[in-house]
Length: 511
Image (cartoon, rainbow, N blue to C red; front, side, top):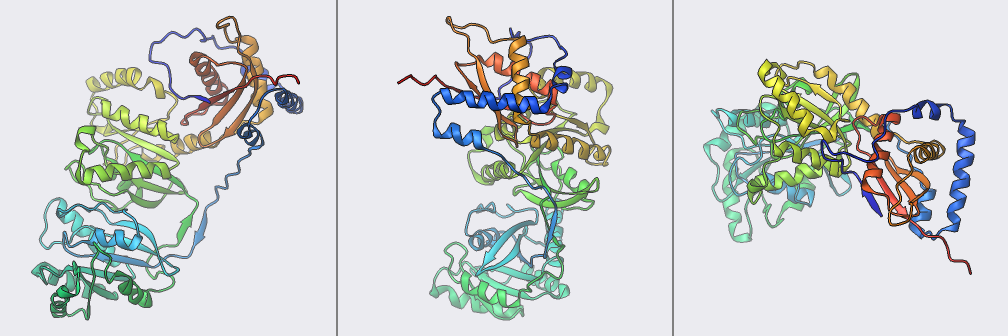
């Protein structure tokens, strides 16, 4: 099988380019019943060709995507708090049973409050990881501490993690005061107790006045299961503080290089300081999910870590943050790539757009900091868009200011348009009528004395729209691009990549 997603380079001449014609009008006048009958005849004609099991499965394929929004009971929330570098994220990973939170042996890796869906002995709950809390913090650390305080207010149960090797510190005592004001059930985890010889160190934490300290080792898993069993006894069945779980909203990943305004965009859309924003590039490390009502609809927005240049991804938290960004994109349906209009479009920006194209997700381009754009930069920007973004001219563009909220309302129609295209399915009869008109007007050139013919076509899938052409020979890449262009001209597909695959099949040998 061969596929075609790669667009021609800007300025490339293509022998299959054709002037606009009345193809759309002719297709609009095609009788649907006649088109379906003709498609059935073409499908029956494939029986004369060598088809494998994959071909037969493909021809039987039909997709059904329910998109309704529904509500579920609010899951109880367990927040993990503590000062920096006591092992909170390592404990999160141990509870989840997988490496989800970014962990590195330096303080301050986690910055936002990040929620994960967790389960223990059949009980589902929301697990919230937080940045380290410090008193009298300034700059980005103050924002991190504020997120930790919000996490306490929005939790049903709090797990306070202390480093048993260091013992209770003045910062830990400040956190205790905070927890007492919150009036939540609190469990004290004495982390880094890797064997029985270290358990007496945990006993010293009785001095904090939070009751029994539970010795655990996030690194080795020691004592974590027993602690979770005890926590579940205090955990309510339905959260007293969290909102109802919304099922079914469309998932939007916010991507871009560091410091282009992704987190500011999420905060402005949410109407609150949901994630840490700072001039320091690379503030976000973990993907942050937030259900937001925007334009009368509920969306799940995912703020991701900025994707750095390859040379900076060789080690540390930024490397794992990049992996999680890629995973967040795989779970999303549409990606909003944020571009900083005050700076030239970079190779890094193009690589992020290519990442979205490779993932097959719908695409919206958000040109941020539009309020800072002057006339000179605007002229250069238009030229850069024309030259560097020629391969994604089909992606909706919105000019916004995440800082002020300017034109943020234009984001919703762009997202809806891209997702509608991403979901689009062309009936088999109409698609084959389209192919018949196309190949009749511009047949494939003869190559090596043979002229490949398109026998039958079907849309194998949507999300993204994926078409399969059964052919008698290999179609030139230029011809497949021609098919893609005409598909866009007739059916739109604004905001969605199109995949055109082909299956070259030979006639059965007569026996």
